[in-house]
Image 1 (tube, rainbow, N blue to C red):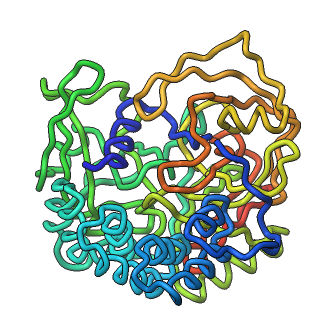
Image 2 (cartoon, rainbow, N blue to C red):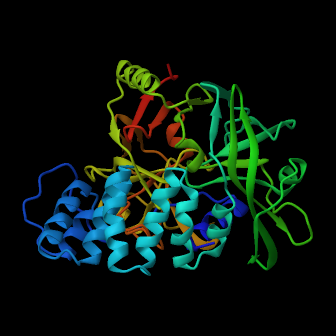
Image 3 (cartoon, helix red, strand yellow):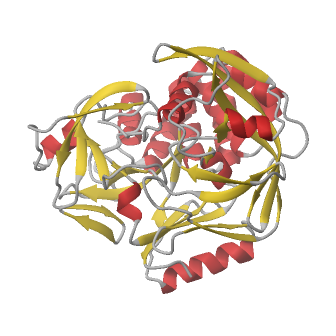
Length: 435
């Protein structure tokens, strides 16, 4: 798999929570630009700081005078992709691809654009151009309609909350399994034992080394995945096993549901009600969900999807003002949020450097430190003087090109319910049980 896929697979193997990362100050969001962005670097700076619509206009201005500007065409397409505006994203990414057919960044973005629309076969040439034969083989093997949804509503009680939430599912009509979920992970994944019991055969396999052990990663297609009253058919799935044939430790669940699955639904992570709620995303259902959120006092927050699965919105840490935050729903851990060293330094957040935490992220060793910001906020949801962590190795500008000032973690959401509406690209968070 490509670099991103490698990280995600190893995150599952390790059970590590994906962290968002930390390096240059960004202006506050939501305010009108005071200076005209008249160069590609100016537009890139707007994009990196989270002023996406301003960046989009800046890229378009560049293209008016220089229609051969690859960076502007690709950047303009990326702005559309962040908000799932697919015709817009395809228009400009296709323009960029014509300017440079072998450009890996453009091919990755366009491949992601097709995947989000379940147009897997169209994405295959993009992945071949990036050298990612794993994706190309996997997605080329998918046929017919993927993510076929039967049923309108499923409410899955949490079987446990900590150290990670678990819900009951059925794989290929088999007995109940306990799956966790995490928006820091992309596709549906499961243990080798679960895959064998379900009779899965890989369409592609890849051998890698993980902490001195040989690991085989397999990629296939799942016939049926049932969650309460909803069944989803023809789903891309992955699993891993040791070369000896055993499950990759630690085994704390039977599998993990990632963001690719959730963006096919109106998904509510009802932490306060201890349940996961999936709704078929019809216009009528979306209208009801938005009305319920409004009655609960939840104002719509922007929702952006980057790096094919990383959920982002706006929030704040300490007195940072509005910043881009990663929204990591699910996963495990005892912290409310994590942040890069620059965030803690810039906003003077109390950090306990005498108590280092030797841990790992993306299967790389890192050292984190306890820290205690006065508050961490997502919309009107807030945690005050809560236990967080800071990691100096994190880069503020993430590999997907955005300055991310922190990530909100499992414990932040416990008093709340969070709904991701990928039909309008809005996020709603409200205290108390979901309606």
